[in-house]
Length: 407
Image (cartoon, rainbow, N blue to C red; front, side, top):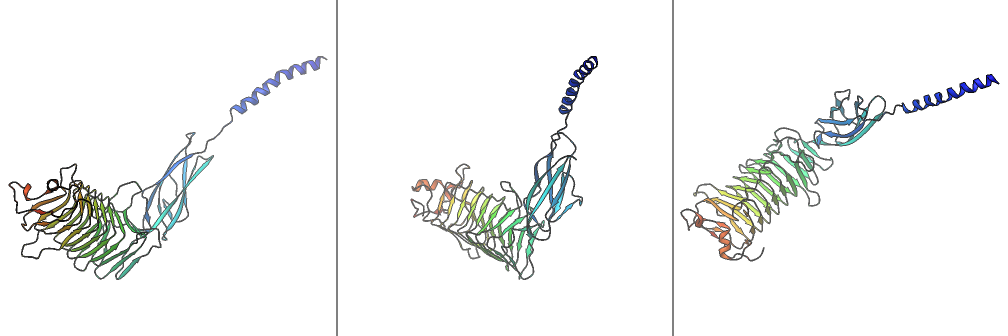
């Protein structure tokens, strides 16, 4: 009896100790938390087959353990080749397309992964002779720091639906041959800088130079250029159904050349359209919300030369910050059947301004709608010789036949 009693006493002492020990073991159990990847960022939204993209993995470990990032991809190669670290560079393969890049983060116990898809475009090159940019790749990339040349005798044709992305501020096209853009209303051609949606960027533009340079552009959308379309030195260019917007400089410039602009919208640029000593037709366009002016028509050539043929007709020239139309020196453009209104409302500008102008033949600005319908009101939105100090009544704008509604 005494032995059993002693055994029971020992058991009663050991059992709680075992239970306590077991409970402590559970409470001290280690529960590791896997690393968390917040995002994978890339140095540019667009990359070409000749480009390199920098990638950064933003990851944290909840336990503050050291972490290691390893990278993999469905194509291309990494720099450094070990493909380890929070930041690496990725060189695309030579074939355009969409590729998957994955970052895997480990703390030596658990790991997490995140993948992104990267679209790769084709590098834009122009051969001697004829080059066609077909709509069979996601986009084309101009990576050069300067303008890509289209040489005399060469023709660059861009098919409907093509997008051209420009990497560098000084990038764009220098056309001394021929540029043909065949966009359609449902499939326009796009030119834009290498920025993500909602961001701002800048690139040089499409530059036509010389008597052998020509261009025919239909349904093209050009954004954020220093000068979207620049024409000089005798070049001949037509632009039809274009949208030129959000530029850092002038939307369209023509100097000593010939340009035709039909059914285009030119808006939200530093300046709209600048025509200097050139023949120009600006027909059925919307020129709105530009900074310095909507249209500036400037003719500096000697009076011994025949006046340039400049026509502005059927256009909506409105809400430009300073002036709607500026006419300088001796030009005699024909400005008929337009809506010219609400320009310079907040800057003290005018709907039409004669600036440093001395031709006494009178500017033909008849049959326009000025947003107001009495002669005195219209005089208030036009700056001509009557506003000069001293007044020069022989320098004037003929706005007779003015309309009481938009044409």
